[in-house]
Length: 372
Image 1 (cartoon, rainbow, N blue to C red):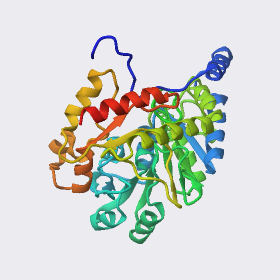
Image 2 (cartoon, one colour):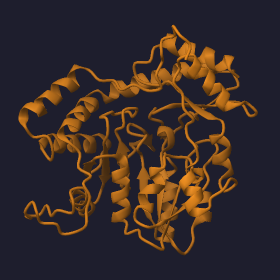
Image 3 (cartoon, rainbow, N blue to C red):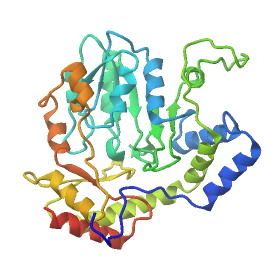
């Protein structure tokens, strides 16, 4: 990094005195885990998206894993997901012994292409993990119809999409089990954490047991384990931060949207490709600001120049099926998902967070364009 330059980080959580106040209340209460603050957070997030039940866990990955367990996935089964996502979209069912299958994405939305999904189904397919990539809702109704036709379980990986809307309703509130994540760069940032939204009381009870070592919540004693489970418990300290974040979520989403709009204006006509715009059925919740450099541009060299100028960036995101362990374990190679592979070779993330200033964005854009 060049000396004398003020760093512009890739991401930064927006926290203030309210989170401090709520955390202090928990610390003074002595209830650091499995306490009422988690219950309250679950109520608030379920109310926010219009889902009957919520289960808070240690991460979004944990939530996806437990939904894969709930779906009954196991050895000999296949599950289909998007190649353009974070690794946990596939890891969640690999944990249960299922084999990953990848269906290509739509070049506009960067979400799972329903036609490619249907073409990937075999007699061993048991589930689909549909991803709301970069906060843009997937084609949920089309994907759900395909799953219903073939008798497949459907899990919605909405880890990046809290606050998004699909056909006028919040993502997470459409009856399909869905997961949000709360890593520090997310719309709600609690350090670590996740939550499952479900419309099934039976699944809600199962997930609550599975996250707590398989304990029985219906009158069982503390050392009464009725099934194999995991320690996927969250803490009340994290839930307190989450409540503070939910209280200001509308403001956080608005600030993110404003920053995205500024980037869009600054990049207009530059040759840089930006993410697709909203339409009547899809409202994005801005998670990261991802752009694609022109074809033929050395994307890695552009990123090196951004970093040399004190500007955070990352290749968002490499294809999951081309990760080293995927290649080694399943033999995946280039050419399996050409749309996803081509866009992933050109995309990078720019600094993006609620408190990002316009002057910093201008510096980012000037550096980006100068590096092309």
